Image 1 (cartoon, rainbow, N blue to C red):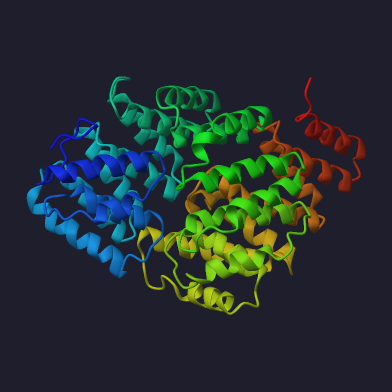
Image 2: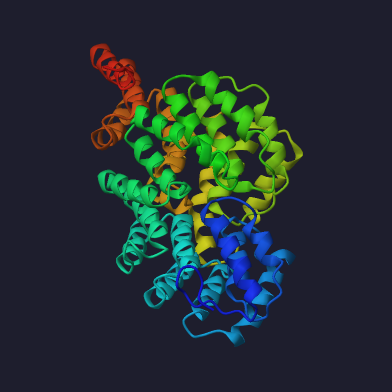
Length: 457
């Protein structure tokens, strides 16, 4: 049957099409419970439903050998006898994911798009999988191919435009990203991913007024989009940290991030990251770490996603005495031994040494800085966005300054400052390094530049 995106989707019941349309509308709106809705469908010919459910679970870091996803995989494989050759590429992608080969999965979805340019499932899954592995150039290539196959009248165009804008931002083309993000929002005013694209553009350029105006104008929409609104609150809190309004940032945590369900691990990263960033600024966050450690404890031995593990490590590093902390560190040490798939290599060469660095951050910042330094060129492999992974760079910078490595700090910050001359945390750290080295005039100038970024004319 032909769906709302002008794509042939295999199914045997007209009622299935209705559920598919409703679930995809919710998914693109980051609202509702599209996975649960699609799992309720009983249609042996329906491949896209179990593919979507399995992909969303694997992208969110669930256990690939678990019972829940096992049911999706069984339904997916059963449906293969009913589908066309092109649509079968979805199942190929999921099979790659099950083996820990996420880049291969993304390439399989890119291949689906070559013959099915309106396939919104392929659009989203390719984009989110490249995002998961942190391959920004491949994400941009994928998004470029997707947008080039559609004209502005196509129902999937706004989706492709928002993703293309985000990919441009992750590759440093902020002007292009802003243009495409604005276009996507013009076509689809509630498109939360397009809004997210612009939030990243403004965050990366430290355009505080633009960021706050955007989030305020679109708040009636994004505050109701339950699948992403915690992350948008996190973006708002980042802006509050940058203007030194730490009480408001803590209020965001208490009102919107503290009560995120333990099962939603990607949204746990928002609260975890926020607390760590506040502590880097010298702010006492009270008992809030205990709240996050308790939530991470529910999956202390589940090591499936590099980005998630990095954040779990932050919580357990700050609460080392909770029983789950030692369970987490011990199980991580044993994880992926003898495995050679893409995900295993990321854990072995990036995640485990980074977790060791974080665990030493409080007691031995000098050793932590040395551990982090060797990992900086590989941070992209953690997945997530540049802004999210920036927490490692900020920790590294803080460790350098705390241990008197002022010359190294200035050397490392110099090219970052050239690339991002208006970013306040870089300016402030560069100012501190200069002052500690004895260059008070130079440090004062850098600090004034940081302060002036938020002053109105």
